[in-house]
Image (cartoon, rainbow, N blue to C red; front, side, top):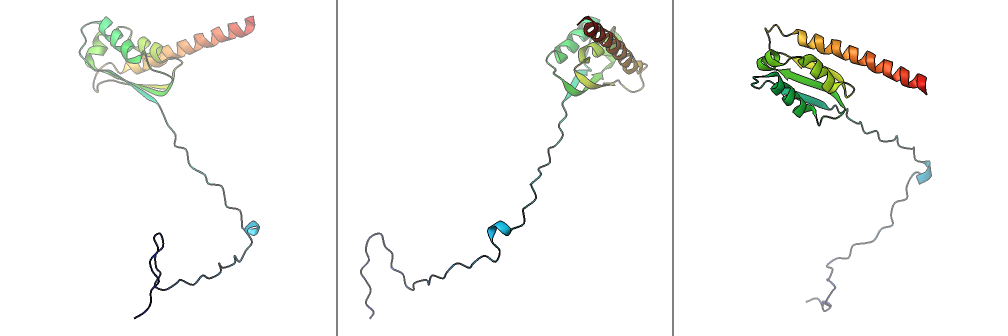
Length: 150
């Protein structure tokens, strides 16, 4: 029978002690290590797109105007605006192209107008573009007048 030391609370008896070995010395000094390349984390591009849905049922021009206003009144600067026009909005929307241009003038970089296929209303996109060109020219004249006055 082997004699065991009595167990003391807080200590655990070791069957075989583990020998302590000295830590290996580094082959290269820490200052001589090659500097690591900086970590580059790619930043994804984010685009804010506003979508306006005018494909509902409308019976008057004022309903189309009110719906367009309600959907765009809280829109902020964005990369693109996509306007989906339905048959009723195109039939009852008097001056719809000008209203779309006015809603997104100076707040978006591009405007897409989607109309139902096979309709004669494909001119709406061209009209939006024409109104935007007029608004941009007017804005440029106003800025030139302001700069000349100061």
